Image (cartoon, rainbow, N blue to C red; front, top):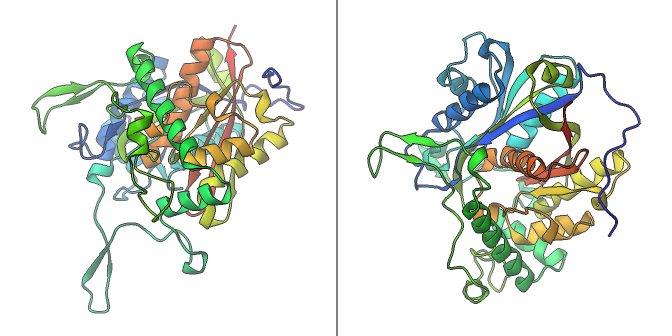
Length: 405
């Protein structure tokens, strides 16, 4: 495999329009109905927003907008609610984005494009999901009475509108990703996440959450609770198919639902020089693509493929890759379609071990990329963050690590 190369762009944006991410933080990612179950979405997100302003020194009234992804919340514009909860002035608005699992990454993409368009100097962007407190959903029947349902409709019935697990089985069968490979990826994800946590790798990016109510009384949640120490290949092999009889997708090689929030500071390169951070991630480009909803897990590959081609790059040019591991089958299928060895991605573990907090997950990917890039310290290192979404979509962001003089 060729050595990853740095970005060479034909046309650079002027500094006042070149988007750059100068800070990224997240809460612990915790299992739904667990350690963070007493916090609503805006209560998860507000501490992250406050932490970003403190870290960067950005005055709260200098924020042009707060752009936040959310998938299963109660509506009401959680971005605005969280911004005010965080103490931002009433003059700072908020915008909530829903592209289901891709929402957090799409929020960052939107903020980056606003910077590139000259639409504002500083944005807070990311995602949040409190699966634990998500509202119950219901349609009204002909008598006006509620009929509850477990999830929204993603596409017309003619497309099959498969559940996530069934779609993961479709991907496994279509791309011939066997059970053994799926279990191998899941085990590696847990082992990497455990090693990263033990070495303190996650500490600098996590915003601890003070819990003043709920089980256990007043305490602070400081760490992810998903990675499993006792997991082995033998244990994974014992899991039965979870979604389709005789299938290969199990609870062991699928993610679990989680609560979390994550956000970044997006600004222009020109403004970044004024603020004085030591480094950041240039946003070279973003893309979102649609695919057959029956193979919805492959959406990230379609977006990544198109984005890399637009910049004259391939998977071999990338130094860092963060992919949302909703299911091992789709992770393997997407990365291999992009010419990326799955073992190269998610070097500190992924959603199979850490959990999938829907609207927050795409922003968690970018937070992880910035942390990894800072650790490596390679000027010009390229990174790709990508995620697939319900309904047959995927979003990708091409990033470049840059130390500022």
